[in-house]
Image 1 (spheres, rainbow, N blue to C red):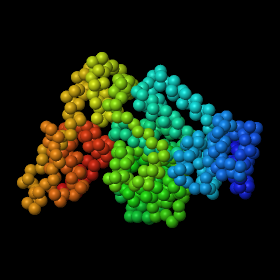
Image 2: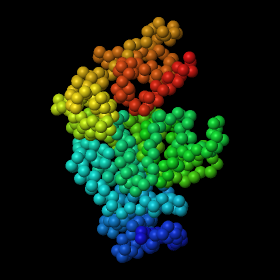
Image 3: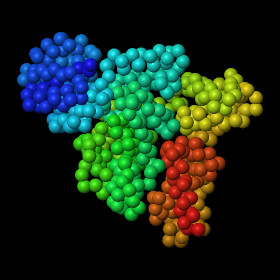
Image 4: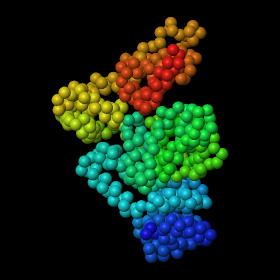
Length: 479
């Protein structure tokens, strides 16, 4: 039977908490000071310890000075308020989570349902590490480069905790796969993992999609709708492209992170949430803050445990391993195995991959389709010439002056890179119009290859598709 230890100097709080835990079918012991806690830990190693930091004879942190006492127990800090400092403290001390007073039955149930011996999680990480040495993958992540081994270490360290993770990296580096791996190694693995692309949802609908809405709360709301926070209850909510979330909604997200409560659109009562947040962006968070795309207070609240993914060009030694992994998967799906020639693998390893792992996967798929035999040579793979085209800051031909109204013929022109075409933008054009011209011109330049267009623009492929869909809809309305 699962055993819990409550270390709390407030007798009334300890008694109430003991009754709640016992009602969930656990055995419970209580300790009202450090001395008593050490005795209880020596008598019976608990599965979970709920630890108040402020005790009569010292700080609850002092228990971490003797690692053997808590070596096989989950430790949950009990705090009077949620804060960034509390989250960081929980991680540094070795605690897996923290719980805010007053403790609600629902939150406590969530914690108790996820109790897992640390030794079990350590064994799983050890198994993944062994597979890394043998086959080159860590769960769903592939690569043996030192930069990837560091990522695996970070995932192993943070997965078993409840702290918020902020993943950064260029488009196509595998941020969602990292988030999924964190979930799979966490105590929440039996509950949902829900991935949400904040840039792919209409700004008019995103609040309703994230928080849900009540029936009749707006035109078309003919029924109650559960948002992502409710659908991911007990699990992990992955917020991709967080910098695409409207600023007014970022305020509400910050409030949820600080209080653990949210409100559906049109509701009058808030409700509790038990969700772990993993956020991601392909932008520099600091630059996004400076550009007004990310609230600074939200950045600090999300950035408890940062993970920065390396671009594929910085770990080219992994290209062959990744390419062969993708090729095996395609062969199994299509029912016909194919292999790369040595020249093909060499060419793959010399390309810079501006679209990162996503571009590599698509290139392998195209080469598989185009290769008529069982061997894939370098003919259908990106080469040196493609690399120059992929990384050059080239856009499209300038807008003819005859198409610009006379009062607006004074133009702002970016300094072109050597041998580069430019997009000329007239003074007075809106930001939305400028963005549309830039995107469409870049798309034409790359001959409608969306992977390279997205990489050149520094946006995700999902965002590019979303913009193109919007432009097509606007043309249909005009016609």
